[in-house]
Image 1 (cartoon, one colour):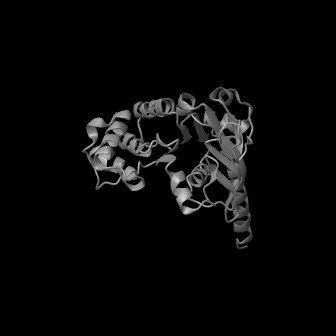
Image 2: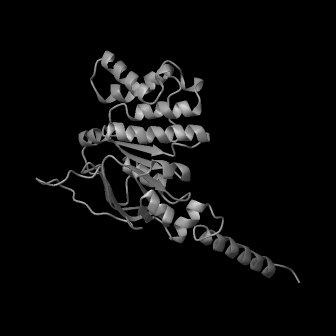
Length: 291
């Protein structure tokens, strides 16, 4: 796949056609004041693949994630989950759409007053009318899937950061979602635990057939887990391709980011702004100086 931005798609299924993409983003725009964070962004994400969204701080990764999970409204454009526009949908449709995806937040977002098992049970109890015995069985299965079966009765403050991430992942897959969003899943973890989380993402994607969308800037993780990578910069998709495409890309922005170079196009605007401030500031100080 080439370094490029958008892929097209259809919003309606027709006989003989493939089903909707798992996620479709159409002409998505979002600005905060003069800062245009998402600039007419469009792409499709197909089912059963691991997609990594990367880019420098402030490039719009978290803003895009909030729009994809329906936590923020765009200025214009659409996000469709399995063909449904989650912003224009009615309340029941939105609730049904939310059951199709789970989210692993950067902090794991577990409730300290509940045990690990009770945290995982929350979305099941909220979105279904299943009996308690069935919920308990589902919770045990999900905890076993992430290697947390022995920690069901522990509280979040009694377990490590890596265990919290795994418990958060068990909760994210509690309702057998078709899509799981991961917000910086390796943040705050040591290299070994990052490897454990990476393996879980790959294994769960394969075993459960889910679509995984991972927001991260950890380059080793990107090359380990991704089927496809998108790099954001300036409100647009500046690269889209496989990890191998990423490794071989000649785009200066991409090269600087994956190599961690301190100088290049990513921080050039910042460097110019700093230089301008120094020069203007020096000039102003000179003009204001006495004879």
